[in-house]
Length: 78
Image (cartoon, rainbow, N blue to C red; front, side):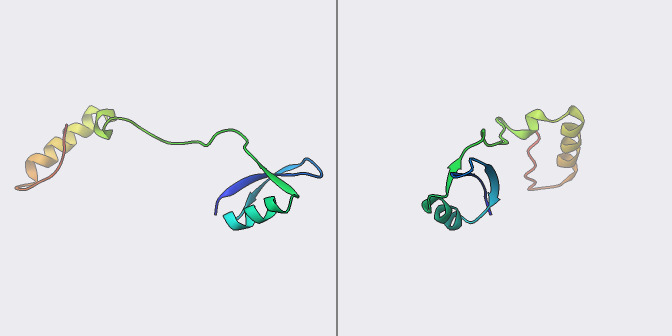
């Protein structure tokens, strides 16, 4: 279930809740809470292929595997 930061409109206190979307919407529609956004989400992303970020030892290991794997191998070593 997702987490939401909800502010109690009477007390001004902000708390984090683990709720279903329908339960969160129900709480907000009651007027007792409002959703607040505290910062941005932490996302993990990368660009390029993962092999370009690996060490030379790992690429050498993959090259040795490719040479000994036989016909029809699909190991990408570049």
